[in-house]
Amino acid sequence: MKQENGITLIELIIVISVIGILVVALGFSFQGWMGKYRVENQIKQMHSDFMNARANAMSRNRLYFVDFPSATSYRIREDTNEDSNPDTTLPTFPKTVEYIINWDGGALPAIVFDNRGLVSPSGSIFFTSLVDADYDCIIIAPTRINMGKWNGTCTER
Image (cartoon, rainbow, N blue to C red; front, side):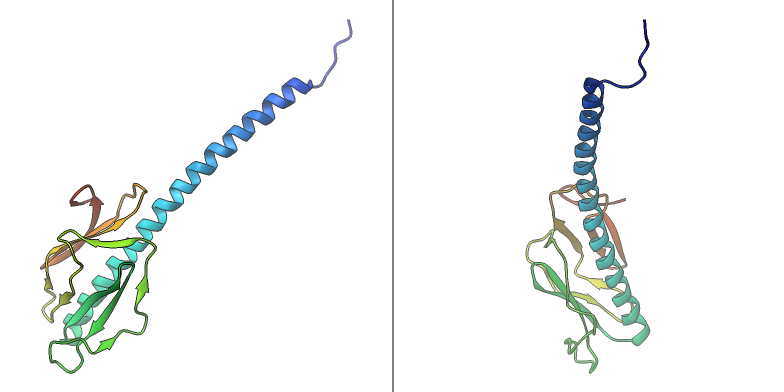
């Protein structure tokens, strides 16, 4: 008998089917990974902005305020004339995020950073999203600002 080297049409169809299934499965996995990355990136950016506002409040001996003009944006403002009211919005603000910003106590308050680095009010900010990101909330306490995971409450990671 003569032995033939090569592949049959059936073998080729099976290999192409397996590759197609893997591509589809990896595509869905990639989309989920990108969603987590977007949430974490935006929480980290917000955390960084809050920490910079706190540092600026202490170094410039002024009050800094974070307020939320819409459900998906925030801005940082400075009290330049020392009357306890924000009068200057920092140049790169307001910033918009893709997700709805929530406060664990209900309506979003104005967050105040004083010249000693203390923050008020205390609470947690979290995003409304459908992905299970590692970081999706910020814990605000008088002496610290930390990122965490939202599970009904914000827990530090």
